[in-house]
Length: 310
Image 1 (cartoon, rainbow, N blue to C red):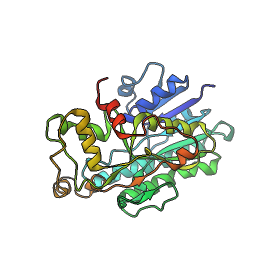
Image 2 (cartoon, rainbow, N blue to C red):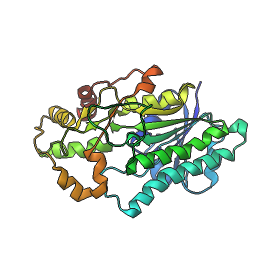
Image 3 (cartoon, rainbow, N blue to C red):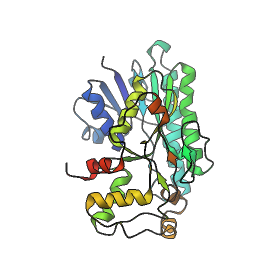
């Protein structure tokens, strides 16, 4: 039976792909957008697009009534930018503030018309920087660095919906590999120019996932009533930065030889260098326990589908 699903951030890199997966199974999709005119041009005609003010009440509150699921993919990008005080305020408003507003919207809906589930984006940064051999799953403790604290507050904002009778899932995203965006597009560009290589020591672990598997786990979270709380949106075989760079080089027929020194990354991004220079061996144990089967469990085939010919 078709579901009615509302997505915030639905015109972004992951959101656009998720929309197509949902439409393929005949769901009815509404995307809430800060710029509905621009989003309209990025999405299939069968998607309803409505205006959205993430940190303010508005007519969009009515859009989430009588829906089966709300998927919140909002959040200003934190990787590849310098974390000034102003930027941190943007990170926090687009995650914590938007999450709190979304819960207020749900609260205003009569109980029998509230969405059944809220799937909210979070990040593998929740766990903080970890050593390359330490295995992390949904039961692992939270970190104490800025990204970890941000993710904790982000999830806490969404948890308010659970007191309203709504099932809440926190989708802790790793590095999503897909065409047309995300971290991979930035990493692959130097390789195409014959100047590619790993960043920093190369030993940091990248908890990667193919975008189709990311969407698959999100749909599992929507559909499976046993999905509650944190669920790692990562693949089963994390790779080191060296391994990721070597694999990109193999797919693009380029050498991975020009390492970007840690000092250069820190000089460019300051504190914002942390997610590039550190990592976590995050495993998707919750998704696997719920029966999810990965389409792309191995790195090379995943990269081939993204970087190879269409």
